[in-house]
Length: 424
Image (tube, rainbow, N blue to C red; front, side, top):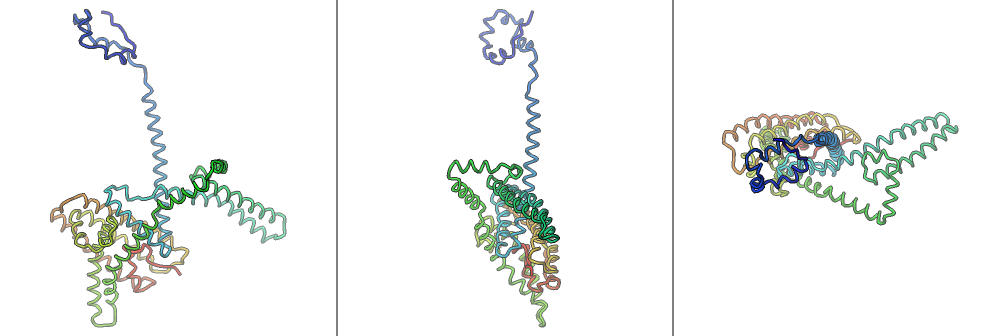
């Protein structure tokens, strides 16, 4: 029998019309000599679809945008670390850095997500991009300024020196105007490369209420940074942690006093400090997660938290102590105030991962309602003893290697302020 070829639109749009009743009414179909399957089988292949091509283009687009997004995120992370290092080198503002790192661990515990600990990375990328682009665009002006200064030294009254000074002055105003316009438009990198940002700013002015809209947007951005919250969190965390550390550190410092019972004080202080450094990271993380100052003193609850994720917390504790040991090398010699941000960056790169891992470990404990088996709880404590003793030994020796002497023993940068020294 000769088959009838139907176009694709017919088979797709009207296939619902073929039913059992229609087959019974058709004598050809009722005889069993043909069927709906024959119609479908005889339909010619569909024309090549553009779906595969567009899927490929979509995949390439996704890869490109994903690469740029990942690059922006990594740049934002680097900018955040740099910003925290600069704040850590400034007195009083150090509490912002401590509060941010505490909030990083606390937010991971509250949400249980590994990615929630990276706070404000996209905004840090924008701020870092503004600083980097401004610095790069000012490099030619700095070079030209040096040339003009050299010309003025060689020939102060010469026409060449005067021309260079005028050129530097004009370029300073033009470049400053361009930077202000680029930042006013949003501070994206492409705006620094576009010379006509002032057109957009003029349009915003003609729309009306430009000052009010800019003021409100700036205020909303400042509020979103939550600087008072981070400062208050860091200040309270510092006060509660210092309460736990001041007594054992004082006894440890008395260990070399010229009295017969001084070694006894030193041993008691060393044991006390070794125990405290194992509790403090858990106490601080619970304090940041619950935002309760009393949580810094609930050591029994800290023991319960450890029992639910012993090996994860033990690993985070060991990293917290081991990452703090190399930082004592920076206290051998005092540094000038203008160079403090360089070692403070090194401090942040060590301390931030340790607090981040501690938040992740405790988040695992919060997901488990019951304690782990006693074997895991006790075996997890075994590597903590040598790590604590090793850390206490370095703290005790720091009074002989640090520029600040005994005072350096109180500068517990792993638990208190990130930068435990000051410049001259």
